Image (cartoon, rainbow, N blue to C red; front, side):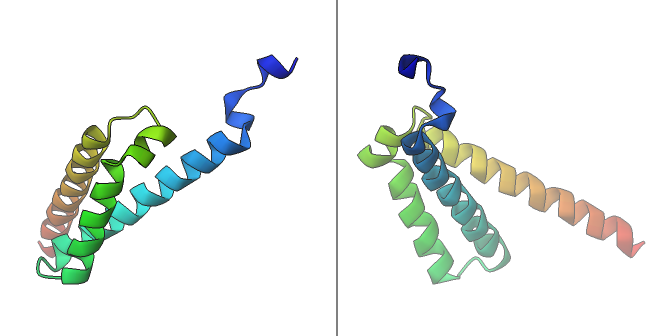
Length: 94
């Protein structure tokens, strides 16, 4: 029955997923900091470092999700969240 083991139960699969999820969370946070303070060198460096990870061979070993696709999706997500917040703030000022 060992061959029927669910991959989600595999500790290596869980570790790979946790690494990627942490990188996603850190990247979102860095992008939000950059959005708020475009010249924040520390946030820019962190975002660039995480982008290098998403493009790395190690990342490709951890997942089949395309790193470039993930970068673009996360950038789009943060851009949309910020635009929604901007609209809410404008409507609250009225």
